[in-house]
Every structure is written in C-alpha cells, then in structure tokens.
Image 1: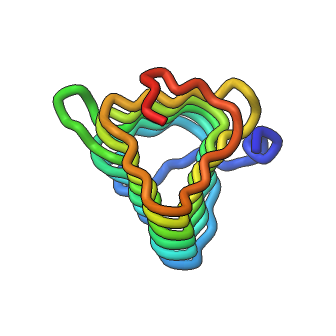
Image 2 (image 1 turned 90 degrees about the vertical axis):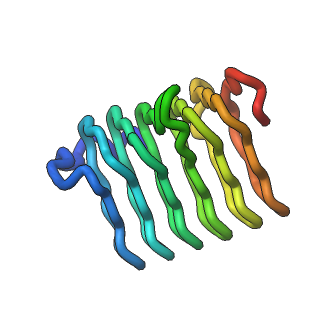
Amino acid sequence: MEAQCSSLAEYSGSAKLVINEGEDYAFSGAKSFNFIKLEKDASLLLCGSWTVSNDVDIKENALLELNGSMSVGSNKKQKEIKVEKGATFRIEGNITIYGDLILEDDSTIEFIGEDSVMNIFGEVDMGDDVTVSGVFEDVRNRF
C-alpha cells in the first residue's frame, strides 16, 4: 500500500466523503471528515492522517484501505466503524475508535505489516464468519 501512496493526489473535496456504488478512489493528505461512506462494491484508499467526527460505513463488498492514521469520534461523541457483509477494511497504520467496531457476517479486517495499532474505546461486535488477519497491537484487548 505504501508504494501506491507516493503518487496519489491530495484530497481536496468535501468533509462528507461518499464513494458511490462501484467507484474506486485513492487520496493522500490529511482531512477532518464529518463522515465516510463507501457504497456497495466501492473502493477507497486513504494515505495520510484522517479524522472522522461521525461514523465510517463500509457497505456490502466494499473495500477501505488505510495507510497512516485514522481517528473516529471523540470521548464526548462515541461513533463507530461498520464493516458490512463481504466488505473489507485493510489497515497499515493506527486506528483509534471512540466507539464501536462492528464487523458484520462474512466481513474482513486485515492488518498489513507488523506495526499496526488498533485502539477501540467501545466494543468489537463480530458477526459469523468474520476474518481478522495480520499482526497488530490491540491496545485495549477488544479482540
């Protein structure tokens, strides 16, 4: 993922990031989002440092890849990352969720490399046949 990041354009769009069904985007940079939503079969690569004040929603069969860091919600405003059926969340970096991580049936969360960190202040809600792969530090032992 890191090699892909070096050639990406910086994100300069809205604070409301929606990737429509079947679309494929990749951005670098740093941004504070209101929310991130990937529709069915969408794909998004984010390289850099990102904050999301509300939820991150990865719809059915979508792919969200992160190289860098992401923070979701805040101590006063608990929010979630939801990975729906057949969707994948691929991480090479650090994630902090002030809220829950919801992994629905047949979803996947993959950690790339050996230095990823997951810090979840809420709970991890895992459905059936969820795949968790790779090496990562689970700061609060939620997995």
